[in-house]
Image (cartoon, rainbow, N blue to C red; front, side, top):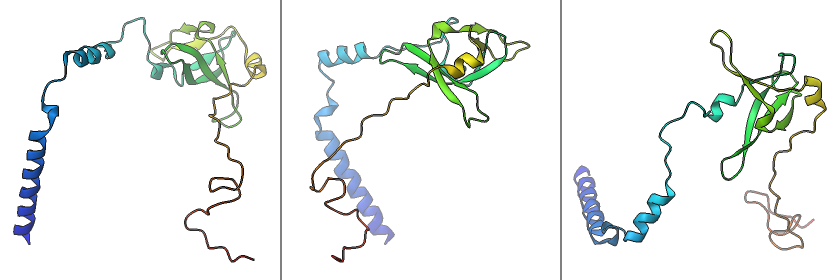
Amino acid sequence: MLKKLMMSTALSAAVVTAAFAQSPSSSPPPPAAQSQSSEKANFVTAQKPDQWLATKFKGTDVLGADNQKIGDVSDILFDKSGKIDAFVVSVGGFLGMGAKEVALAPSSFDVVPGQNGSADKLKLAATKDELQQAQNFARYEPPRPTTTGSGPGAVGGGMKPSGSAPSTGR
């Protein structure tokens, strides 16, 4: 049995090796393809002192005008180009229950250095009451596909999900 297994493994390896030897991908890509791939990759090799990572701000305390904690950053909203549009702040509630989210442009905040080695904080010129009165931040929900009629994909008709009991016709 072991002998058959080893023979089939060796035969498979030989077939795969022959297939790779015949594949045209072993030749280098044309010069146009080489230049396109290097233009698309724009590597950033290090963080600069005036740059922050999103992980630094997520969970960061948000202070109000009176220097009291009024919430924390629950998420960061950015556009396709990578520009930050807003910090989403969770306000009120207890342990995430009953909290509401509001989103504010980064220019609304001042970075306040932490004291005695603690993490930096974000400060607003607003109060907790003002944030609780602000409009809730609405996360994007993609539209759900809608179907009409009585075809196979229609709601309330057509095929039954797999595993369901067959209809008795009554």
